[in-house]
Image (cartoon, rainbow, N blue to C red; front, side):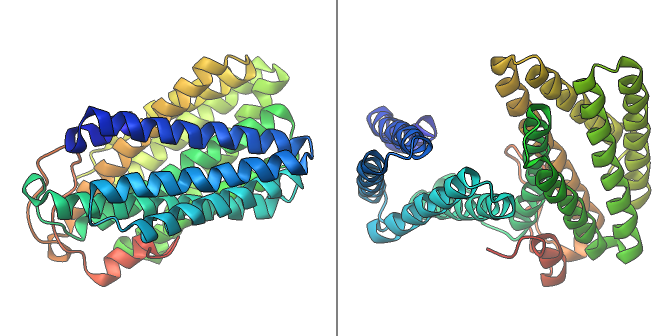
Length: 340
């Protein structure tokens, strides 16, 4: 994050922001430790430091960009701290539904923070950016849906491998994400198609549950059987999507899904082997790959439904197009988690 601001504000500013953000994390480490030990005095001290650190971050950002008012940034950061504290309490208390709801709230709020920062950069440096469009909202919504998929897959793997009591709740949240994706597709292809996609994606999850169970039990034969089922399910998803949109070639979609499966298996193996460095790397790779797939899906929608979008494809980075989505199309992709 610090390096990302260097092109706009210089190395000194990037270094200062990095230092403040690292303090933010290390203070959080202290808060978690004090909470686990039930050391109320230490927790109170660390929470005060956390609030002061957030105020320093807000002051640094507002001093760099007049479109980031200090009070507004401070309020956003305060919400982030409050939601994170709620998440910690829910997990400490074993309240798994609240734990899931807390993370969903945190993820939504931090995307709001990111959008505010991005809007401020565009306002301060208009010459560096092309005109904004609602096609970017489609891309952001698609990324959110598929990021949810890999985030909750990871949480399920973490919990299932460790035999933790939140595994079922994580699996339930993951299955709900498949409904969200199917409902989003229904906005373009109809309810029947949306339900069909949801069904295929739920099969994808339930096969993954079987795979993790087989791997944890060391049952090689069962693992290979479920692995073949997973590949076959990915083929079905690729065929379904290619049949719906000619801009999603079956081979290309199958390749993206194949990469997703391989990376997810790598993540599960790393966690089972307690190879924590590989575990972290695996999730980074998974998130990068799923964003690539989400962008490909967004670009395909823009190409297939030009009447819902105007403008031409963005040149830099993401393959989404600049354009304006109809309210219906945009909201179908945003409705799963609310327009923010």
